[in-house]
Every structure is written in structure tokens, then in C-alpha cells.
Image 1 (cartoon, rainbow, N blue to C red):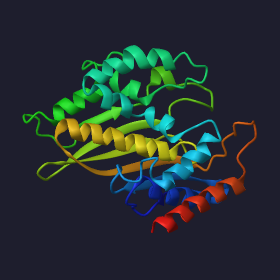
Image 2 (image 1 turned 90 degrees about the horizontal axis):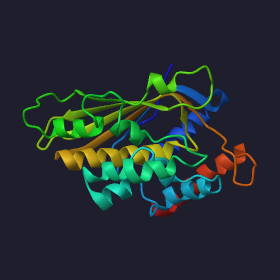
Image 3 (image 1 turned 120 degrees about the vertical axis):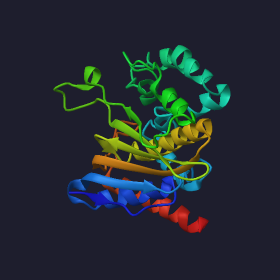
Length: 258
């Protein structure tokens, strides 16, 4: 039981084809949906009119592409402070502020960079450090767990983390190429997917830049995917026609750009 989306060149094309494919499934949901993006840095900027179309839609639902991507990687903070300084800036200044919000639901970046009891302290930076160490010969031993039984096990059917696991691989070449496979427990394709793809692409760019690697493909396994209908800012709910119109808008912009 799986749904394989043909490989796409960029984030926004992947979002569009994945949404269309899952939407066509019974009950507008699917299991084990596999997506691969050739260049996860492309089709990821608000300056791209296709991305802007999705962001405009999300803004009407009190969300944004940037808000979602920031939960995975705080791109602006990295640009401002560089590494490793931006880790402290995130944990000491950003995290205490955003966690006070009633809407706080956690940051995946927090879990990547501070895991209680982990001997290396910062698991993500440890991965980068091992990748750029010439004494480390392995190309496939760079794993990062996001699911935490201590935080996430409960009897509630709602909430909890959706991104469960990240597996980085180094592909042969000079320099080596970084690939990433991400596994999602549950995936909302309207509200979250595009921001997730962009955030993971930014995460890959960070790891590649700091470790002296090329950015390669991003693969996503959504073990459960659904075409969600998020609530609007005025208290309503997204309709099926709203979703179809959103896809038409992205298609229309793509036709103009072509």
C-alpha cells in the first residue's frame, strides 16, 4: 500500500503533484506516500509566484510558509549569526519567547539540537562535525530521531510530533553529495507540506555548506498523508472548492512562468 509521486525538480512542483495525487485517493488520504525532490533549494522562495500563491492561501488561515519552515530550520537566524553561534541564539533568545505563546506546539529544530541525555549535546552539530572530519569514513551513519517517547507517547489521537526521523546520506563524488530522507508519522498536505519541504531544503543547505558538501535530493515518506481543510482566520473551514481553486491558481501561475 503505497503512492509514489514521480520525482519533481523543486519544492513547489512536488507540493502540487503530491496534493493532486493524494486528493484523488479515497477520502482524500493515502498511506506511504513517497516524494523525491531533485533540488530542494529550488521553488522555495516567496519571490516565486507559485510559492506566493500557496503562502497567500495560508495567510488567510493564520499560517504561512515561513512559519512552518522555521519549525525545521531558522534560516534568518543562521544568516544573521552563522554556525555554531546561532544555536545559542535560538535556544537562549528565540525559544523562550515563542514558547510563551498559547499557540506553541514545539520546534523540530529544538529536538535536532538539544536532546535530553544525549552524550553529544547537540545531535545536529555532531552530524555536521562528523561529516567534515576526514577520519570518519562512513557515508551512511548520520541519523537523527525526532520522535521522543518521553514527550510523544499518549492515548490522545491528536497532537504530537509529525516528523519522526531524518536519515542523511553522503553520495560519492568530489565533493560528496548530501541526500536526506525524512519520515513523517502524519502529514497535512495543505497546511504543512510546502513549508516542510522548504524547511528541510534549508536544513540540507546548512549541513552541506558547513560540511563542504553538494546538496542532493530530498526524499519524503509520509506514512499517512491527508488533504486537510484548515480553519480560516474568520472561523470558517476550507472547502473542497477552495483547495481545487488553490491548485488551479498554482497551475495558472506556472503556465505564465512557462
